Amino acid sequence: MLFIQQYYKTICLIFFTFVFLLINYSYDFKKYYLLHPFQPIQSIPPLDQSLLFHINGSIKSIGKASPIYIINLPSRPDRRTESIALMQTLNLEAFIVPAYSIHSTEILSRNKYRNKLLLKLTELACWASHMRVWLTIANNTPCQNNAWSIIVEDDIDLEIDTPQIMQSFSHSIWNEADLIYLGHCANTPGKLIDQSSQHNYRVHQALHPSCTHAYAIRSDAARKLIYLLSKPSRAIDDSIVKLVDNHQLVAYSIHPPLAMQQPVSKNNPSDVNQIDRQSFIYRIQFSIYKFTQWLYSVPSYEKLNKSALQKANLTKAISWRKMYEKGIWKNI
Image 1 (cartoon, rainbow, N blue to C red):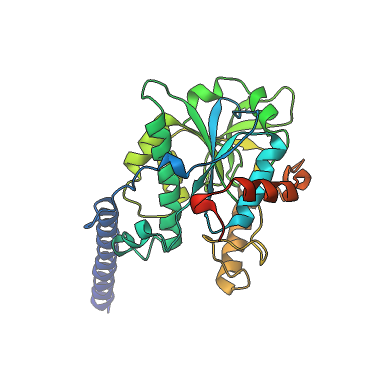
Image 2 (image 1 turned 60 degrees about the horizontal axis):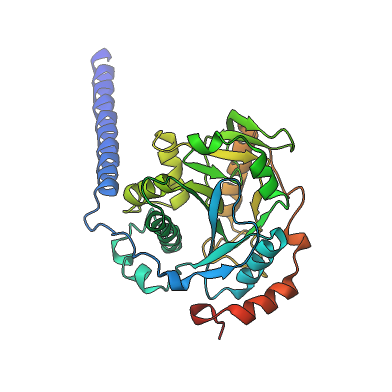
């Protein structure tokens, strides 16, 4: 009897060892595939400067970051109107950059190289849109001039005192970080870096900055991301999180947030996050997300202190947009 028990233990040990090795082999193979794709996705072409849609404003920068780029699909004049109204309310100069869609030629040509299990087509379009802005920043900034720029997506709201708050932080934060998130992306606030003496806002080390809706980026960091993320294997925000976790990028975030994404609704559909909020899977994911926030004591913010969009004049923005938009921006 003892022999039989020992025999079964040996068989079980061999079986679980085999399963363990098989799982590790599969993981290593997948990891190798992600790092060395058989058909690499090459970087996208630089942006034609004539495609930029210039918004006038007397304030040229946020902190030390200038210019401000807004990523917007030409087919979404509704969001373009809100972005224009937001910049006009804050009197900020900005440039609207055309985003890629899942129907763009550049995206469709790369679709066959995409790992469909780990990278959605919408995420590929999002990667390409940000990559094109990084290329624009890299091409427009001499290597010796390590300047900052702001990149925002077209579905955000900003704190109305954003320029003043960013100006109140110590200049040292611009010398140490590669990325500064205007919204904290629900990441756990890490080490306190700086605190405004005039406003109730803080700069923390960003531990898990899973978002790309509003961030400042150093030109050297843009060049680094162009190199490191030229072969996308996952969503762009997850890729940046991995680089931050591996200490390849230094990221800070603002608490409370200066920028927040507007909720997706029937009146404000998303071209990237096409989520069924009534589905069982979404509810499970949302529950895990809220639990993680609670577990790591991440404060939950439902709205900004003083929303700039609430004070925005959309009627004025619509008139201005229709007067000045041309080319790809002209809504037919």
